[in-house]
Image (cartoon, rainbow, N blue to C red):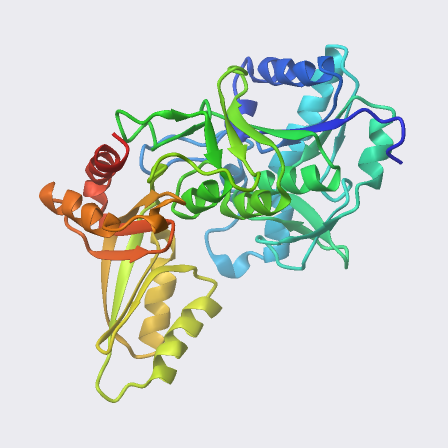
Length: 411
């Protein structure tokens, strides 16, 4: 199947790169660069544009996933998860067909494929499926005849034939999984940023561009909230050991190389500062007679409600955790049903420092806390691992906390 086939590269185009009057022209230039270098191109596309932003009041682009979801009833009782997958996958299919048509109009042979046509096999989970395997036979057959295969990201099909979507950031996972399955020479991920930065440049004034970064740091940054690569995609990347570049589609010479080879480490103690989205902190108060079984039941009940928790603290007196701001009403219902005494603190954000080299150094946590305290930033909770230290702060202190930590550890 692969005999006499030129080497393959994967190019993933995010929603912002697919939106605007000149978008397809810039995307086509990137694809042509790959073709002119002697490669066959598999382009993985997201839905065009962005959804509505409730904070800024920005209206959503017409084919963005959030816009499509807005067509569904507000009452979740009327929404079937399987059918929700069907409407969510439409944005990526529209992108794939539109781009393939444009490429053919400028003389590049191209064909659009859905995720399930591309052989992406997932588990049965609606709205948040995981890729089990990829059967690339159809893609390889196409590439013997066509220069560019445009694949709708974020979607697949279960063994039983159920159409599924992969959850937020699923197009990143699609691209990396295809890179492994097709033995791609390298992967290019195009976003609205010129690569990876030491902090969000919209939040931290002196954030610096990183020419190279360790794959494990990308994993930790993603889980800490940095919107560089989806966390599941980052973990897959780290396991697959693929060559990856992240950058802007119109700035090919400026990008960040993600190092997956063994032994590569950043020279810095802390690689980056990251921040998460708005969360609420829940504190459940424990009475003297409450046992460990009751505590386990709290976590199980919240998990069964399909809510992801973070920043856990368990003592003799309290159980404390955070959840995404959009899931607060679900957790409140769960805790009331369990007859828990609890307190809720809305409007919080997690701010983290990330660096695979931190575990080798003493006193990092002390410096972390001292920098925040001296800046007058209230710390509501902390967590740490060998590569990440995080603080929960009131949302209005998120930006100054990032700046303070960046100045302290990165400069």
